[in-house]
Amino acid sequence: MEPGWALASIKYLSEGGAGYVTMPEPFGVELQKLLSLNPERVIASSCNEPMIITSFVIESTDQRHLILINHTSSKKSVTVSEKLYTLTEYEVKFIQLK
Image 1: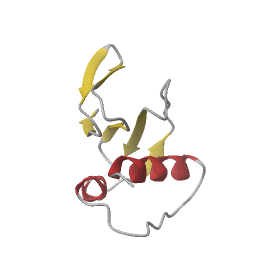
Image 2: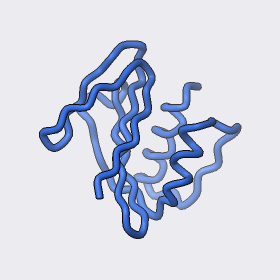
Image 3: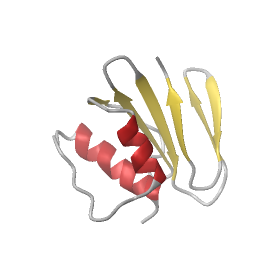
């Protein structure tokens, strides 16, 4: 499983009410980056094509981050609040919102 799907799984399980998520094996840099942000809450978000791009919003005490995940082998563009983001193949992009 590529790292983006692991993060997407965490997103959907959290939005569905899971308080804890156990992953069967380590998923590297992206999971470590997520944990380093000390997420306290997942804020529901959606994307037009969730099998292609996943949007994941997390909040900590004083920060909010948007995580965009490209699940494809081609470059994709995503517009969020009138700002355009370009994702390379299988890229996971962390964006600080506040």
